[in-house]
Image 1 (cartoon, rainbow, N blue to C red):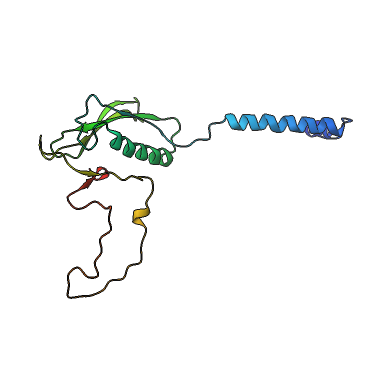
Image 2: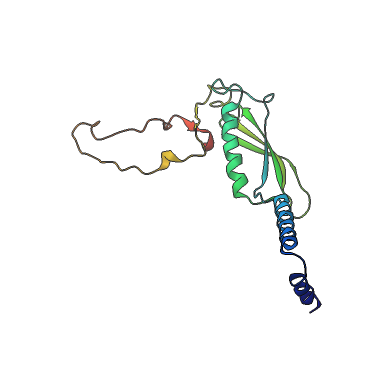
Amino acid sequence: MKRLSLLVLFLASDRSVRQRLHNCRALVITLAVLLAAVNTSHGISIILDFNEAASDAPPFDPDGSLLTTTMQAVQSRYQDVFEDNDHTITINYWWDDLANLGGVHSLVSETGGNNSRETEANLRFDTRIGSGGAFKQYFFDSTPLQDEEFTLKKSTLTRSASPNVGKSRESGFPTKSTQTILST
């Protein structure tokens, strides 16, 4: 009851309209500053580190820039998916001859306790066919965060005695002999 009477006194006081408007503006500015200071971002924090020294760099990506672009797309996607503001993970990644394993994950460190979580990991991506064989060929999407190649297109199928009539092939898609980096 006392608070209500104080509010009524404030609203009905002899203060000028100008003074009340000034107080309201000050209140709005203060609230805006406080709201701007609040962390409104969502997502886990992922730190990427390409380990060039450990990398068995393939000829198609000698500096790891293609792998880094792909990893940055993954980072962007997962930081939006996992709403975990209080968790950071560092991912060290590089190319390596893994004898056709595709990719290998290894734990570097984790938090302790009952809800243990990974805080640092190593990701290695295979570069060669077999152990020490020829370099694998990967397809790298130049626009990994855009899915325009998966939109449905209307096509007309025709029947013909010739095996090539009525068939078309989309260019830019990986062939059976080419792996995508995300397929490893």
